[in-house]
Length: 120
Ligand SMILES: [Cu+2]
Image (cartoon, rainbow, N blue to C red; front, side, top):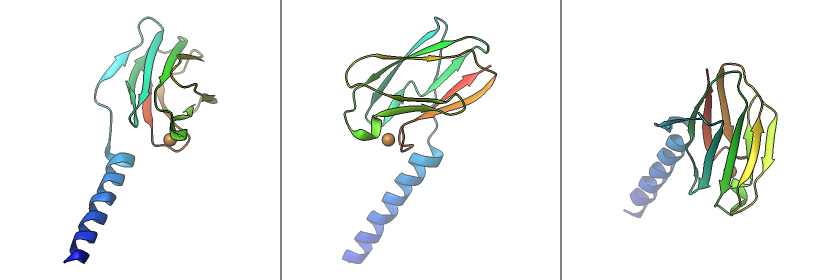
């Protein structure tokens, strides 16, 4: 009986991990019309986690990290060479250059926090 319970718990944990790393996708895109986008880092998610931005225009990510755990410490943007340490409970601006159209993933150093910047 207890073996069944342990197996069920293990299966549930595996499904959580699969969902977290491969299946989860943010649903709502936020547009960076003003050139500044505020991102909150809390409870394992960036909000917003999906950002639309026009190509050829610099963007500022204004990041507020509320999660004090080391997992949330860095924000990395793939393809742009961005790797920034985030202060806790204080807004931190990350300037992104004018970008080519495409999708740029941003994430913490362990890939638990994940987001996508869609430029086009
Ligand atoms: Cu992390």
